[in-house]
Length: 397
Ligand code: ADP
Image (cartoon, rainbow, N blue to C red; front, side, top):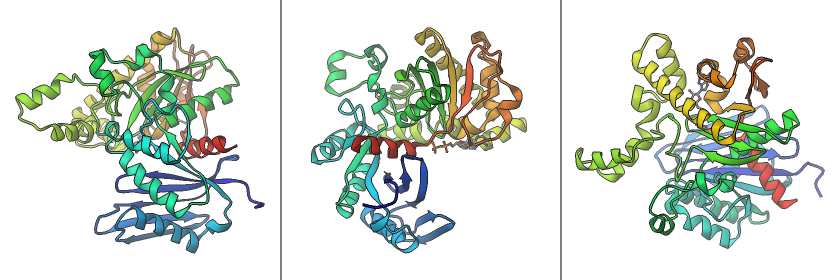
């Protein structure tokens, strides 16, 4: 038995990257973290952080096996020594869990095969996760591996919000429904709000506004709607994704524009949103340009805010009222101007921001509405890695 508290190694394996963090789930401390980027390219980038040591390197890393081998070497060389680090499990982020998973799952051959079977619904993600899962299970065979799904929190969606008005037989045959995404973040953030306020009964809207962006409606801790759908393409205006768009735009681009399906896929996912509207997908640049009088940038922000107003209004109506509006992720946590502009448009709900509290910079969860606001507005920093570590730990307890 180790004297150290239990620790979970969290792995987020993408198609050309592998990010990791060693976490003590009970007290939420991050012990070490790092990433390998540009796997398979001529020069890959590696960084490992442990205490005050930060080791970065550029070198070729052929594939995910080589990437994880390099990560284990870095732990060995820079620390902490994994042999004695008291790792009780590895938690893997998995984007698509389909209808199979409404919570974390121990990865055995059956779970692995189900994640594989779900690849057509998340072709950019699930195959990349499997690469990380397979090499990690091989190289760290003595600890349990657990999958934590982005979609799990949204398995509670009522049929009325999860079902598209599509021919039923076709939808069933091809598993077309709204699965949502970012669920680990929405669950973590909405639970934090319950803990912080010490209340069980809350009608809450969480706005996760990062490069990817999504909204969720959560009643008493249970999700009843979310803006991402079959894939993370649906919903809000994002860094590079369209969010909601008439699907007939696809027919039009194919028939009239002569575009191929893959080109449209790339256009909607990678060349749209803020990037498509302004050429820039970083909110800080778009904001700076709008402040300097750039009309394109201002319009992009207006489109983004208009979409948010529609979602907040719709969700508040669907929940029969709104108690807490919560902002999280890169833009949600940092862009006080966006929060102010959005809340100014939500006066019908009696929302009033505290202008001083809103601009206060902090890494802690906080209330930014004024005392006489009819809705409490909060900023709650998300921490998906910690949420994965905790879910992994809870499955094994
Ligand atoms: P990801 O989805 O990649 O995890 P993040 O949650 O890190 O994204 O959010 C990235 C977004 O947050 C970027 O658009 C970035 O410009 C924005 N952001 C970060 N800091 C600020 C800030 N101070 N003001 C406005 N936007 C910010």
